[in-house]
Length: 354
Image (cartoon, rainbow, N blue to C red):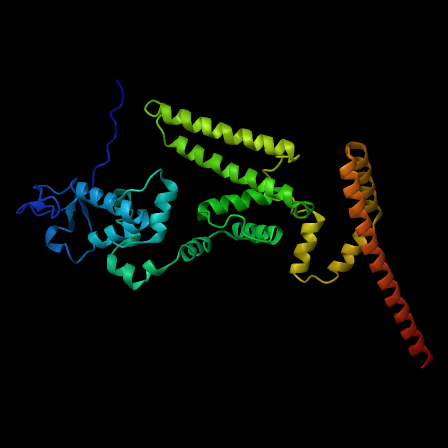
């Protein structure tokens, strides 16, 4: 015989048995309000109604659906919070939207009944000017609470890419995307915009795969088999697309679990040293570039390119044109430096004579 299932007692909520609880929308009355009405426990409007909102849950759902069709989900939530005299917070709304397959006023009402929202009603929403905040303001408030490492990931991505590649994504997605993209950074990635764009696409696809996995974790294998099948098929398509992008662009995903990949490279370290204004960084950088080890690595790289690259006539011509331009540019720089050196020598000679 199995052990009896433990049950959690529902919190006892007081109500006045001397009168029925009536919905002011549909007119239905109930002797017991629990299960039929939401509570706005800090509202000053519903004190004599045991803090129950005089709109039944069915009418709340119907009103919300009508407002949502006309004005959108967020605005509908704001208006319903006004009707029920509960606080509206962008952060609460966004968290429910991002963590659930769909939004409902029931989920929102359960959230704002928690302890951190005690003694608050819709007047707090007005006083704190919550309704005037833009999406960017709300996102910034959330990202200000990121860990130092997460903020550093964001700064490094912006420094390498030159713009915010994940602008417009929800904050939780952005945190994941920056953390994933930084794993692929190395010395050469900033000099290859096309490859960088393909890596970003892989990272975005990985985020989509993550969302599919979250949806799957919420489904019941017995009751939601069709939904699971559809999600698995969609996920397989994204995985296949990632594999194709990686193979066509020679993007390795091995060992990418190490978040410090690319951060131990010379280019990254030198960039950090310059930002920190560390003395002699430029001199050390020059000495390293002229070292025997660096020259050996450059020679090996050029040898590998010659052995494994197959150019057609168009490629060879493009390489020739680019090399010619580089040679002319470098020759001009050398001539200018030689002239500067000659003039400096003349100045030194004149100063010695005097």
